[in-house]
Amino acid sequence: MTLARPAAVAGRLALLAAAATVATCTGVLGLDDYRDAVAELCQCDTKLSFLGQDCARRLGERLASATAETRAAWLAYYAGNCAGSCERALGCYAQPGTCARGGCALAMECCGYGEGALCVQDKCTDGGDGG
View 1 (cartoon, rainbow, N blue to C red):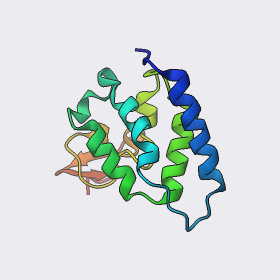
View 2: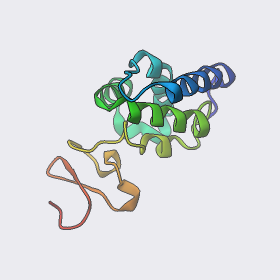
View 3: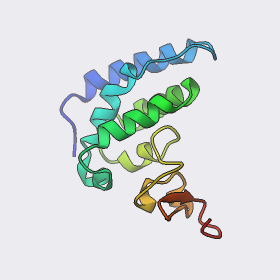
């Protein structure tokens, strides 16, 4: 699936990523900077259907609770790898900032799912002993 405005979104994301790079460690990047990217990512419903109808809200909340550095790194990864296309949607979702580190309903939500992370009793685990 190719999304409708790849050039416009990619250009804006590239500018935001550049701005994030020069931000100080104490600078806080607002969630507004990421809304377009999250909304675009959540349009990849065939790749992210496990997140359900509230995909944008869930990912937005996760990014809002992440550090400024994690948000900037996520945005830079998104701009360079996922903007305008759903081919790598799972890879973008799996980045720190949007993947789940705590509560989950499915293993696919968990950070490290591709490396064996599991969702056990509604919590992400590293896949080792289930706890």
